[in-house]
Image (cartoon, rainbow over all chains, first blue to last red; front, side, top):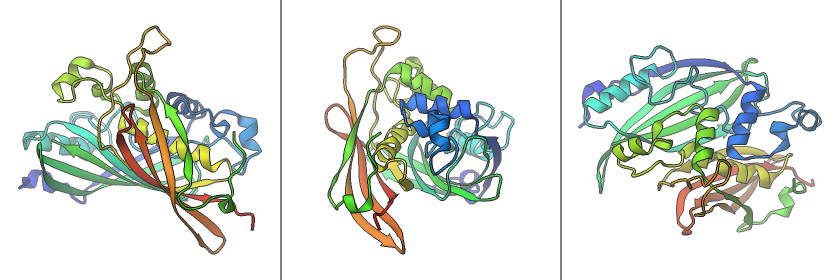
Length: 167
Length: 154
């Protein structure tokens, strides 16, 4: 049984992050993936495309890119910030409960609108569920976080469901 | 880029053009910088050893992005990626570097996929696919699925 100090986070909002989609960040991202798609690299090609502008690869804005100020999902509760504050506290509580290590378990996206260079995105996250599963190597804790992204025009861009596994 | 794929060109059980990838320690550092995921599990061997994963592991999110590229390459510039999911079932370890820019010999990963279903809602034409990442031994470390919208010849 998970302690209440952990389960109380189910349903908790983990705040809102607002960030600008910079052209240079798109290129760095595509470069790290080694993805030469001209929609991310070639402004003129992209201008003549259906998008009329450079776009991000799908997944660009997903976790963990949206965590501003060099934060990652491992950030400790002591750091300042908004987006993963609740997740940081949750990480601390899970460590106290005997699950100090974590791994990325997987991700689900649904995309609704393209993300263009210069867009301002707003991501709102909520801890959807915390599930205990007995495995062959011991008990694993699955933390499911859902994030909704909208752009500067209030248009829904994507919904993301991420799973972190604590052990 | 390859010529545009149309919904009519695709049939169930068609193979998606495979995409090869090589993870290197250098690439993982680039990904850390580009994605903002600075978890030392991905670049610090001493830390990785304390975390029960042996040595540094490839970021799940980088494997995700390889599989997304598999789909965006295949669907072409008129295609739209509508849904995507993947699970990080097994860990992958990057190749070490031999020189500043050249990696040592080792495994090559392959992003692969197969069309599972075609369907349409009004004039929106969908293709569902199973997708996966195989390591050098041919084991699936990252299974997933994707749905794309393709243009139709009408």
